[in-house]
Image (cartoon, rainbow, N blue to C red; front, side, top):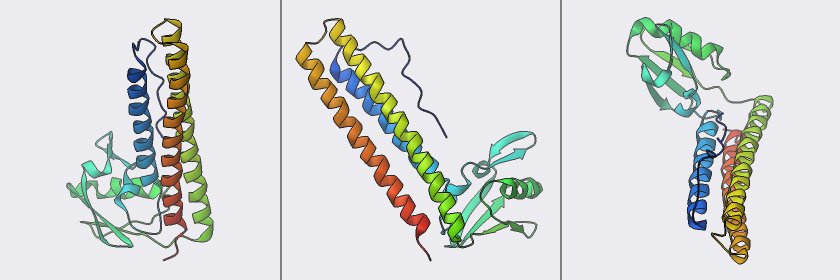
Length: 200
C-alpha cells in the first residue's frame, strides 16, 4: 500500500488556483492508488489484478509476474500463467503459493493453471476487513492532503497574497473538494465490497 507523500516543503503557491490544482492532482493520485490496491483483493471471480503484487525471484531479482509470463482469464474461475522462459515455472508457482491469495497453482510443465475457488464466508469477511482498512488508509491520505491545502491557503493570506474573504472561500472550496474525493473512495469501496460478497 502506497502512502501519500506530503507536498515538498519547497512548494510555494502564489494563487488559490495553484493550491487547488495541486490538491486535485494529489487527491486524484490517492483515488487511483486505491483502485490499484483494491484490484489486488480477490473476489470470487478470476481477475488478473489479484496477481499485481506477486514478485518472482527471476535470477535473483524480484520481478513482477506480468513481466515474465503471459496471463489470461480463459474462464470466470480460472487464470492461466504461461512463463516466457519455462525454466521459471517453479519459481513462479512458488511465488503464487506463498502469497496471501490462498490459491493452489498446478502446472503441466508449460503452463500454470490457477483455479479460483469460490470464497467461503470466513474468507469473504477477511477480505472485506482488508478492503475497509485499505479504503481508510486512503481516506487518511485525502485528509492529510486537505490539511496541506489549508496550510497553503493560510500562508497565502499571511503573505497578503489573498484577502481574508478569499481565505474563507478557499477553505470552503478545499472542504468541497475533499468531500467529493471521500465520496469517490466510499463508492469504490462499496462496489468492491459487493463483488467480494456476491455469491456465484
